[in-house]
Image (cartoon, rainbow, N blue to C red; front, side, top):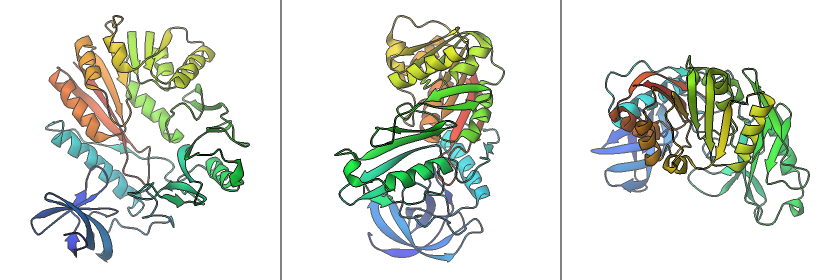
Length: 387
């Protein structure tokens, strides 16, 4: 049915950001749709009983549909929710979390799911990866569904200091770029902008950011969260009122949660595989005068396979998008901490891991979404569990 076009009505937005419709006994996934849209769509590909389609014409727009302000929308692969009002974005993200927890984790009687809005819906992003095509002399982001570079002069979700640096990078003579450089990682802080790799005048300098009274240093080689205006509330909900003798911070990065955990527990062990992030976490702890926390450089899986695993009162884990490895979830269940906080940027892998934790004897105490990624389908979710 490739290249066939027909009319559909979008029922809702699915996890992953696609609009759901049905036609001719088949399920239709439509990119860049709004719930309630009446559309003429073109089928791009077919996979068993599922059709993947693109919009040819908006016949009757949804009340949630607005005109995307970005001139690159639809071609650039970065933002896929600019066609939705912000209220509709938040509602869609709550539905995505609910769908995954019900369908994948098989959780019934879910509590109301609230997605905390971002104070900044635009110009919020303090971290980015800019793709570089030196042959075509283009700098920006990958085009939707491809590895072609969409040449972007102005990114509407970048913080102003990063947008200014994007303009400087784009103005740099091409002979100054390292041969073979295909992407450039950048991160901003209150003290400047860091680049990885460094070249020309763009350095991998250390930058810092103050969150909830804690000062964090990091650079472009170490992961740090993307939306600074959301981080204090994310930490506050993730930790809640937990306190005790010992806590474990898994996938701990530069110490975003490690520092506040060290304020609430007598001892904290943080586990992180990235050596650059570990160096910053140790430095951040030292600067804060927190000697009751230790950071080790290893994968979380390898740590659980070591002989040093001991019982703890609380575990916080903030794994990458792929979720926690099976050995990690098993290790957590075997440790049986009274309370767990799981911080996730992907509702599907979160739901997969929650199903295992619930089977291991845990119950959801509370959960909340945080809109760290306005104008995209991505959402951060924090689930607090207890035995």
